[in-house]
Image (cartoon, rainbow, N blue to C red; front, side):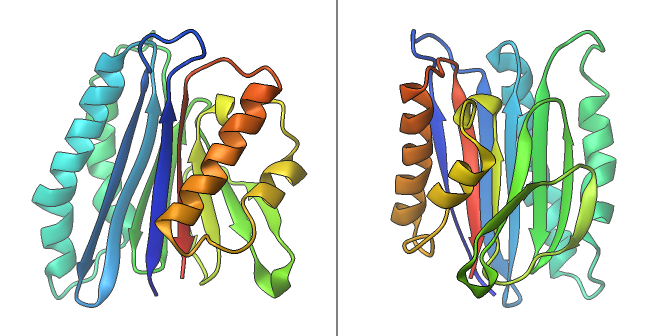
Length: 206
């Protein structure tokens, strides 16, 4: 099973700093994909930037070596101790949101807080369906399914059926096709009055 992914990151309509930080890490080990994806939104760049830097460093220093060993640890066992440590650094009053996805093969772990959402797009029988997933969540993801991690402004003012229709069809097995679909979501939202900063990651299971 393979994974293809891409992202969108755009400033607000009036310019300025985009407070959204992203992580996209994909490595092939022992014939399977090990991936870390994160969308983090905060009032300023500092919290999100520090979190994504910590996660990326942890992924290469601890996660990948653990996945190379004989004992195959579940994604939740790998991620949760580090995440508790990272989140414990931030003051309680800080307003921020994040969604993290750790994949080893087709086994996943989702963690998140705040308003960064994750949507499952299922293409079975060529009839696209979409639902918002709650976090924390772990399990297996099937071939042909897609996951969209995003800040609210990417899809604000769009009905779920419209988001599902845009993120469906040919081309999602390539990075260029995913980029086109994400930008279509972004343009449609802007046309309907969305003005905030945008960040999102889409991954497709092949």
